[in-house]
Image 1 (cartoon, rainbow, N blue to C red):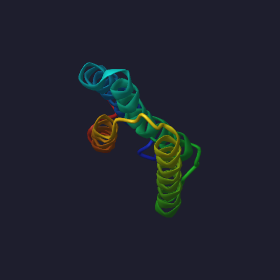
Image 2 (image 1 turned 180 degrees about the vertical axis):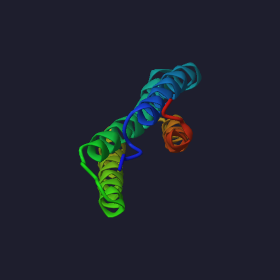
Image 3 (image 1 turned 120 degrees about the vertical axis):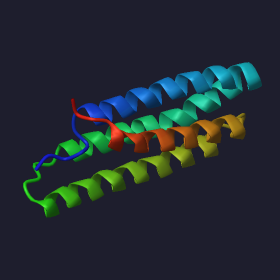
Length: 123
């Protein structure tokens, strides 16, 4: 049984996250200067790295039954959420000049975009 975290859907979603992060960083830089650009970049980078870890953890499983597939997906999702929490803590705790609007706008945009991987066809 194939996991839905392998192949084209996850790669496409990660590419969309990368593009959205780059555009958001450009907009944040024009709007709020260098700290706006860095804040937007970090907001997108959090979900980009978490999405990559989700795909990596999910694809490492040799799931043969529906139950094994579910366990693999739960492990992948738990890894993604844990990484997001750790990265949020690191960024918000250490980057003193963060521009919260640029940061969270990009963060939430990439959260929504990652969920679109479900709609990407394998072909």
